[in-house]
Length: 251
Image (spheres, rainbow, N blue to C red):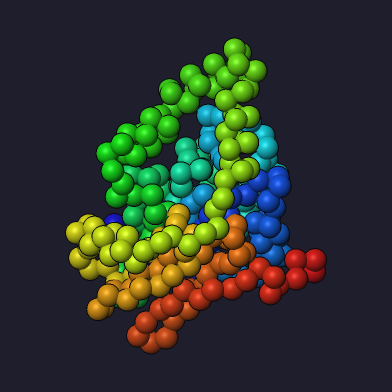
């Protein structure tokens, strides 16, 4: 199944929004006030530093921006590709098109061009796949939530928040091209007609060309406040980078 990718659609990845890192909220205000205009917003995962439906403290901490996103989702189409920091989101964002990790990559079509978009934490080894299955399991999460709330005085969630606060996210990955080479092969084995591969997750903001295929790793909004807009001519499309600071959020 292919989903329509629209002209001037906006892609944004790895915002890692938290109460201490609020620039993504400013970006949404620009959308709300139509200073930035689009009719399709694609959230490419890790939009929140931590948001999980079963962990109610994460919903409480993010309630203001959740309300804003839900308001926007009634105005424009929002597609949310879950990441490794934000998942089990369907009940939080009922008006959005939500894609879980096992539903990615998501295939889009722009005219006759096939585009694969994912957060990027796919094609992993068996150990990581098992971890992602367990951590997303509703019953595991409910058990941990009850254990933490009633017996551990929220020590688990506090430790997670502390670890996330100290985590370094903005750095260059050595030999990233070699990693991408292997990933492109796996994408093509998934669908040989792909012409564009778009990922977040790695925070590298790099483009590589392979014959008739282009791989683009989006920059992390958390690192340089960038988002990407779909532009086209008669034969091709591009994902053009824009900076939040280019727009006046105060208007």
